[in-house]
Length: 212
Ligand code: AP5
Image (tube, rainbow, N blue to C red; front, side, top):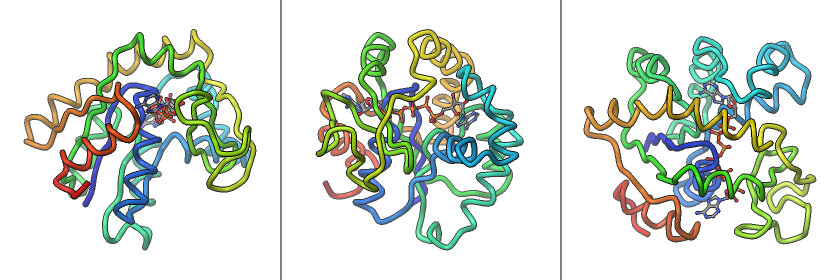
């Protein structure tokens, strides 16, 4: 099962990716998390992408494609993977196709912009593993501590209201077109992301033909 999760910033791709990963036993590959980790480590890649990430703009396609091409060759991807946050441009989607990377389903989590801006103000993310929480909708079991790895959870730098608005503009300008791209390949499944997390998860599983 090779799955793409599409959706606006804050639509719930990371949240659903982790749940489906646990259910299907395949890894989630989040370019956002990989880039944030590179920044935290102070690597060359991290320095290269810092400006784009902080302003909520897209990192150049060639940087993203080199990360992805390497990651999906790793052993844990042999039975499938979930792409969270990639592809994000037509060029990235075409590059995946050109590399012969098979995609079975593309799930687009549909959430309107007003709900997104509300959600983002309550989001907290793990500073180590990137797991996503919400102070009201999905709080960690112990306040301020990640359920998965025990590290501190914090507000993400690009969740400032102005940056969120810019990220939404970028989504509408560069990423939304991927819905028609994958609809043309017969792979697009639309799922309402503006419902309780558990319900959205069940709808995704049904949409990709898995048992709930
Ligand atoms: P990335 O980290 O991918 O950010 P994003 O796509 O903007 O998505 P988010 O992580 O903000 O949101 P999400 O959809 O995962 O939602 P979440 O589950 O956290 O990218 C960051 C940056 O990296 C980009 O701006 C760019 O610079 C760069 N980048 C990354 N990939 C790139 C690429 N391919 N090309 C170029 N540049 C790239 O949920 C959000 C909140 O809502 C949480 O608090 C959660 O608890 C809550 N929530 C989730 N579901 C529900 C629900 N059903 N009901 C109520 N609350 C919910």
